[in-house]
Length: 261
Image (cartoon, rainbow, N blue to C red; front, side, top):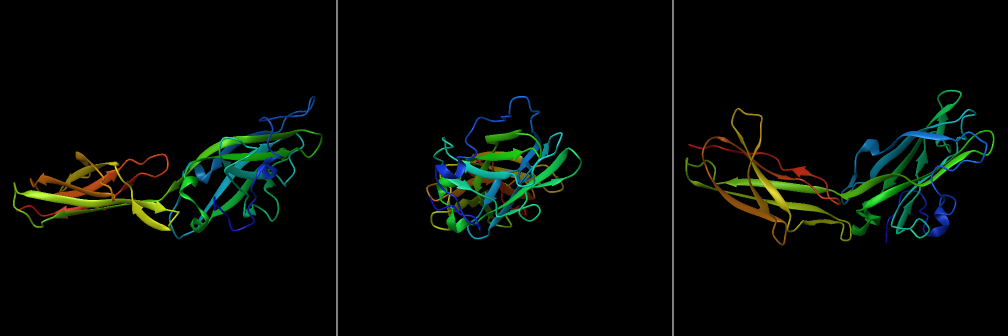
C-alpha cells in the first residue's frame, strides 16, 4: 500500500500498540475521561480526486474533573485488526502547536487534529471504511480513555458524471439520444477511469419547473459510458444522476437544455 500524509507515516503494529486496548478504559476508583461530539471531516465522507491533496479534521470534546493533557494521541487506520492494520495515518498538525487539545473551561477541552491525504500515495484499496484511534489522559490521577475505533468514516474516490442530449433543437415526437460518462478517480494510475456496470438515472426537468423526475435507469458500459434514447415532448433539461456506492460518492451531471419545436 502507498498511502501517505504530508508528515511522517507510521505503519505496522507498533504504531497502534499504545492504542490497541479495549475502548473507554479508566483506572479503578478514578472518574473517567469522557469524549463527546466526535466528528471526522464535519461528519461527511472524505473524498479524494487524482491531483489535489485533501485536508480534513477530526474534532471532539474531552472532559474530566481535572481536565485533560493537551497532547492527546489521534490516528486513523483501516483493516480488520488494529495490531496489524492495512494502513495507518497520523496527523500533519494539531490545533495549537504540538497539542491536540485546548482548554475551553476548567473541566473541558476542545481537541482537533488535521490530516492531509495526497492522492499520489493512495491505492484504490484505500477506498474503504477507516477507524479513528484516540488516547486522552486526565491532568490528575491515572484516568485515561483509549479506543481503537471510537469513530468510523469512509474514504472515497471522487466521481464525475457528464451528459449530452442530441440533436438540438429537435422536433416534438422525434427521438433524442442522451449520452454521458460516469468516471471516478483511479488512485493506482492517478487518472480518472470509467465506473462500469453502475445504475445511473436519467432525469428530466420541464422548462419552468424546479423538480427533476426520473425517466429511466441506464447501466454504464465497460468503459463507464452511458447511452439511451427518449422521445422529445417539451422544452426542458436532462441530466444523469448517480446514487453512489460505499467507495464512490453520489454525483449529478450538469443539466443539458433541449429546445423542442
